[in-house]
Amino acid sequence: AYIAPLPANITLNSASLEADVVSINDSTPYSPAIDIQGVVDNNTNTLHISIPYTVSTGVTTLPAYSRTFTIDAASTQDSTAGIVATFSWSEQPNLAVGSGTIDATITTSTTYNAKKLDIENDIAGLVAATFNYPTNSSGTLGTATLKVTPGVQDRNFNVVTNGINEHKFLYLPVTNPTTGKTWLNNNLGAEYADVNNPNGNFNIRQQATSSTDPLAYGSLFQWGRKADGHELINWTNGATGTGKYSTTTTKADVPGDSLFITNTT
Image (tube, rainbow, N blue to C red; front, side):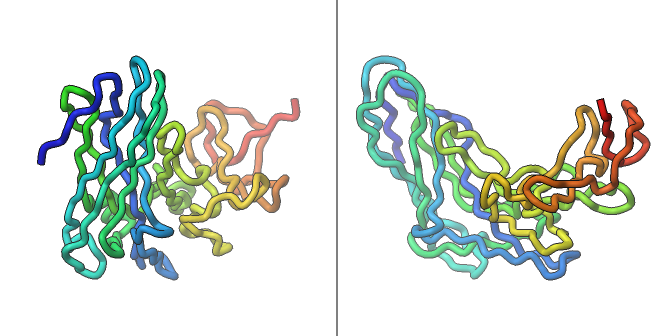
């Protein structure tokens, strides 16, 4: 279908934009299994995509926009056919010269239960819907994607250090509504992100409950050192933490151990 171009004095970011639904079922080697049903239900789980814009001259109005896509039943957990996803934004009046973001949403015609994915085997995720949208007055189109993901793995998720897989951290992508930048929802190494957390604190959706929540503090990387385990910190409260492998005062550019280097001076 024809997509009308935008007014001449406004452009939208044409980079591929993405809204993620985290949906996981993975029982190997996790006990208990990580079982999270990703849902879009237009109420508590409406999806938002922040789209950066630039106005070059004068004051302008960005017209409202809407686009639909029928979700493939194969990307649903319950093999439901005919679910229609809608990508849209409302009219944005009186946009002045400069840059900012608009809020677009993805809603569904009925509750969408996303297919549950395996953390290791389905790391690439699953595209459930793809929408085009106008980005300028020349008719250039951008792309917004609804994607099912098993989360964002730590870079060393499957790397063995100190004889074990000790970087089994799993994060969610979150987008800053002001800047449009996408971040991980927790610090690297946070207990909330630790799939194998011995204290049972793993909760992929949880973020810090306060600025002194030790379960959200995460790792302390020493400058230039790889993630060899030295950075893993056991936080006992909001002010105290100890390195998983203790400390040493011996300085080295390439340490032969995972001790945290300290220096009294």
